[in-house]
Image (cartoon, rainbow over all chains, first blue to last red; front, side, top):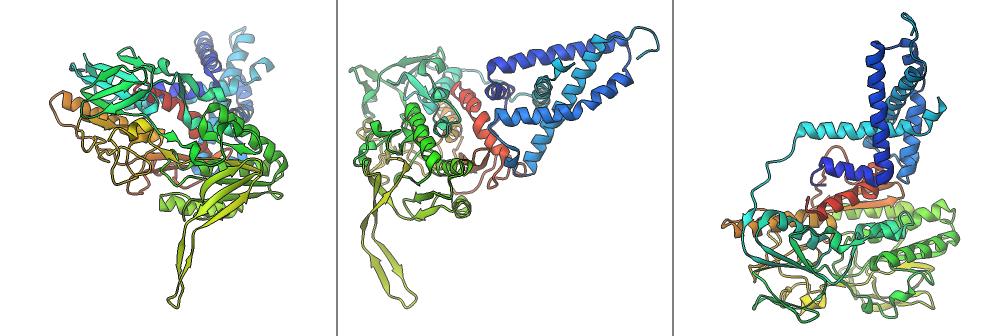
Length: 120
Length: 455
């Protein structure tokens, strides 16, 4: 590839998931991010208990992300061939883990907001 | 909480990746500020609206103001040809490779939906199929090449998809028909026969890729042990770049492919499921100094599945124009351009882009991406009263699929040097998942961006 522009990058992601699914995902991700920022600002602190539960979901997020990407690209784990492949795969897993953790934290905060001072 | 676990994780994850990439690019910043358009009244005719012609037309439309840019092509459909292998491997539908020619051309380009019937570089006139005469100041030849199916005796395109005959180069429908034949063959097993023509050809890696893919399907379906894979090479090599050739030979050996050297396909007997080859005369020098001459012979190989790739030549209209090399590739007719500037060596107002160029490498879409800016540089500079400086180094890229899920990203230049785009990150001769990702998902958007003139 001669150069990678932001536009090309967007086109690559549209190609992977299909235009509709990709932009739906972007919208969902944007909503979750806004909601996450909202609960942080609203609660004015990070709840350790909610954060712990969110962290427990991280392995699930990692595995789900890897399975999703392999399925979307007609690939299997046995196709991983070299260090760069592992780096990309770990990147996908890490992104999935962090993504789900944020989602779980936000969901808890929205569904079970802190009711009194001092509670989580 | 379970409603949140149905995939949103990875979606978020991917958004994270995309955002990360965007941030990195934002830091890197855009390139130099866009150059001012050059004012000109030049009449520029581009022959062919394939990958090369379309990208060229859109680049020129952006760089020039006042120019009359005309593109001549009778084909209404645009074919994303790098996708044919994926279609023929059952991974994409035929529609994946199809779009409309007109959708890609920017407003500043006039499209004449007819084929060129004659080119007169002396009078600087192109005549179209309906007899219209187009006078030009500059001509860009981007016709692509012709697949000479008639050169394969006994073969016709209506055979594709039956009797184990495939021909994925022929077009989207034939690529899909080739998949049906390959799918049926790999269900049962038998003899799979592959090869390539003796002429220059577009994407010389594709015959190897398809051999690997068929092998992969046979293994997945548990039919490999009951099958034989024969590759009939047209000379003594699998690939023209020596280091890639060695690697391909190693993998062929590992996979147990049976290679027949110096076999030139001459015909197909569809009913008898037999391919006919000519093996040229060969000479061998023994240790005691005696020379053994094996005369030319005809060879037949039976098959249960084959992928026919015919000889490839310049279209007749180009071969009749006087633009071809007189002393090189005389049976093929590629045009006589300077390998560095891609300007015609006898007609200074004629350039070539893409498959039609008579240069030793570069019949791929990746080469087009590197060739277009070179021609653009020389043409725009000339119209601006300057001299162009860009040089094409023969860059060609081939994501060589070795199985579904793995490929080798092979990039090289005129000198057969490997020219990796991501040195130290993506090893060129290693079978990697990331190289597969590039072929399967990143290539088409890159190609589409190129068509729009973002090379």
